[in-house]
Length: 383
Ligand code: ADP
Ligand code: MG
Image 1 (spheres, rainbow, N blue to C red):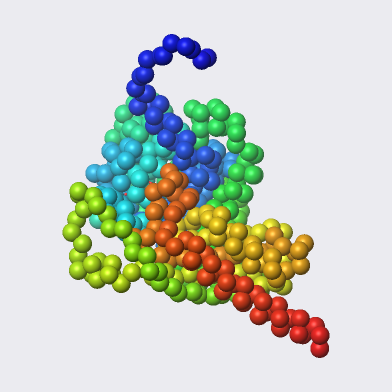
Image 2 (cartoon, rainbow, N blue to C red; image 1 turned 180 degrees about the horizontal axis):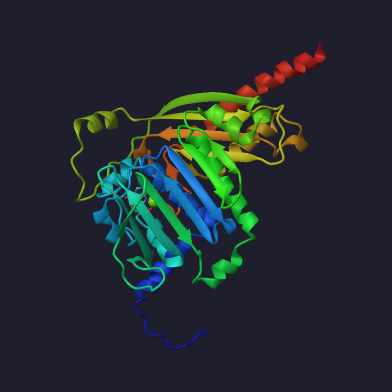
């Protein structure tokens, strides 16, 4: 109710702050999976296996063969703002990992039951630890509990159980298990397309064969074929655009910045360069829905500007009603100093220098290729 008298301002309880923060990052099983996949990739995994029960609402488990977590780090693993990926503000300008905020595992522990089994190469056994609200706990008694030794392979297995058991509004906003599972498969597919060197498996608990599986050592074109089918793969065009920009990235002005080494000074004089690799379907291909994947420095992101530009490119080429049936996978590499990933807690949105010029260059290249092909097709029909 609105009152005329000002009410006292109070500090929010820490547990409430944490739950609000968790709500921004974990919306549904698929958003938890995104964070877990990124952690496994950051850990250098070459094999990632996901097991799902009831659309990930009951159980979501991800097993990787990455570097593992040191036993000494387990007590603070699920605290907020604990990370192995960032230490100074200037690190943020040259980030090569997905993670840096140290919030994902913490968030999960506030809205689900989180269990970690992990082993580094140096460890003689694996360690199992569970967390409730950021704290090492026994899931049954909810009392504090130390990590326990157990059998296990090198790497990390993370299990999220009973997602949103303590957030009824979120729980009731979820769709059916099969719809949630479809979203999980969608996230897996996107990461699998972009990481052809990593073997991915996604499977419902109890189902006889995995719903998604890709081998490692495939290249991007091959993984697109495996994941989206041969009918798309044979109509795929691949282009690579290189560019450099005149705009200089701003140097960080933080007090804790470490001195730039000579290499960095050298490269910052040269200005910034970018590479864009694009796979897109030609005018022969029509599917049920449009798929547009954009990775900037390996990060799966969205860009409405880029999307509009590509739509416009296709619109010029295809008959009106055939539009919205295209497929485009794009991978952009930009000097990390020119990309700001710290725009949104889920990092779904990033800002980068020269967005307009880069977008225009790529859209032009696609349009050129499409019209070349369209031209030869018309020619064929005429003869
Ligand atoms: P961030 O990824 O932003 O660092 P997270 O909460 O996602 O934050 O993870 C916290 C830390 O836990 C990471 O920095 C990393 O050191 C460790 N970690 C999480 N998942 C894994 C994994 N699968 N393998 C190895 N280390 C992991
Ligand atoms: Mg992370």
